[in-house]
Image (cartoon, rainbow, N blue to C red; front, top):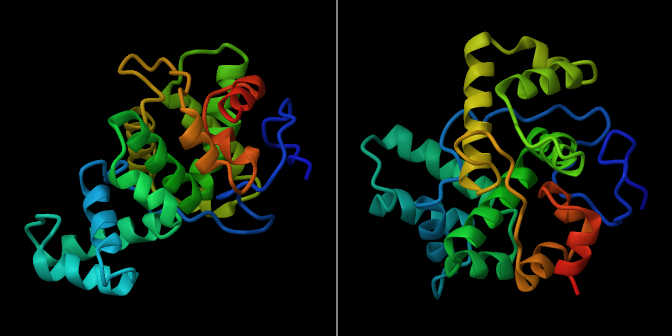
Length: 227
């Protein structure tokens, strides 16, 4: 499968691209808060993986009944559990099991993959901006890069033009928070190369090596991960 022209065109990796926007599909833009949920996600994954569970509706009910996420209001708990489950449901059994016992770095990578699968906008930003900057040795990622990316994507996604200034600010702020929490950006805005171990890389690459293009790494680096 050829990579689309508006993706990282220098890549020779092939395979499916989880999270990539289909032509004509609207961007889902509800990632206005919460980051990657590094504390909450393992709790929800463990709840789903518990003996006798294995059902996301049952997991949601248990989360709310037990106030597993320690949220003060019922409405906030419902919103957070809905968002968490929407992302985690895009990880398969093996990925959820890896999430449950992951070290801090791998936890960030797994949750970044889940966010990219959930939100095609984040996926496209990861491939076309974050990774491309890494490949061209443009190390600094600025807030203005988000604005330029959004403006460019608005040509094919009119839903981006209807966002209020406040919503745009929240999306930008939370996306940068996610990139930092995934250990792909430091506090000075410098892009951090991804350092996936072979086992995690192979796990995330099962749909195809192109699944790893959401990380700032060259084709050669990705191929080494998969050896």
